[in-house]
Image (cartoon, rainbow, N blue to C red; front, side):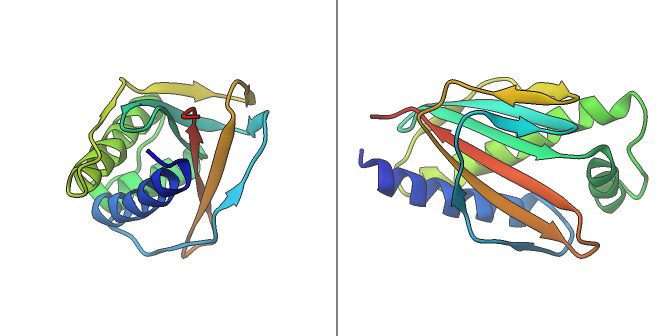
Amino acid sequence: MDTASDIHMILNGTISSLTTVLPMKFDVLAPAMTVAPYEQKELSVLIGLVGAVKGRLILDTSSDVIGSIGQSMFGMMIEGEMIESFTGELGNMIAGNLCTALEKDDYIIDISTPTVMRGETKFYGFKHAFKLPVRFEDDSMLNVILTVDNE
């Protein structure tokens, strides 16, 4: 597989997945390269990718954004102990939909179970990383980070 082609397919698949999963209006801003370490400020979920592409999908956001997504999806705010649980499930939904979108182009990718991280965290150990910023109507943000380990 060609890394540039892989990245293009995964970024497009991610946008498609976000559109399918998130029942709210948002704008996807231009993707940009990012370097190690990537610094998370509050809350993220990491999902490993293996198969046609090896890497990680990280959704980096805040508790407020997760609460708003829950409000939009279920009609109630996601608060307290449910924040981490829903963050992991949201990661599963987005990564699962990404796999489905990529299968249409014969890209077969499996995903790991989600790992939810709270607080300030630095991510190291990736060769290439791309940041796909997503801005919601209230100007809150969710950053999708795609790390690619393919040579």
